[in-house]
Length: 125
Image (tube, rainbow, N blue to C red; front, top):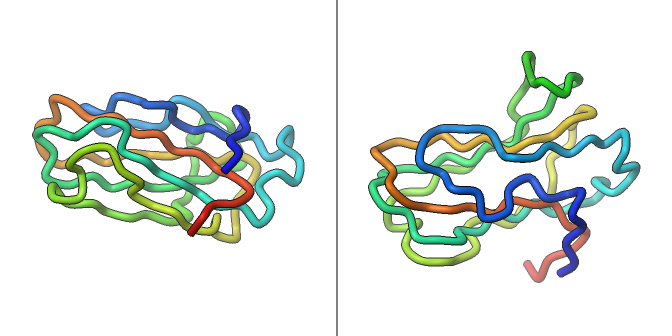
């Protein structure tokens, strides 16, 4: 699997509270790179103190995401967040606007946990 740095939303981003991904994808500058793409989320570090982590893909016409919509979301329970592992592989949903980001909703009092989230052209699904 090849990873283009312009399609990385989070690179081992520490998630200790609900937050947006460190980076956004601008499909205006990414061209057709997001067409027929696969979204991958990986736990880069075991989560501690999290009873649930919801990973959402959001899209917007504006880079500030003041107005955005959720393309897709998947929730993971405490048992799913043990150790380093791939959490999610899915085809990027249709309906994405110019900008795409990840958003992490944390339930619990997180003291550790890191996520990598990126879009790639293929994955061994």
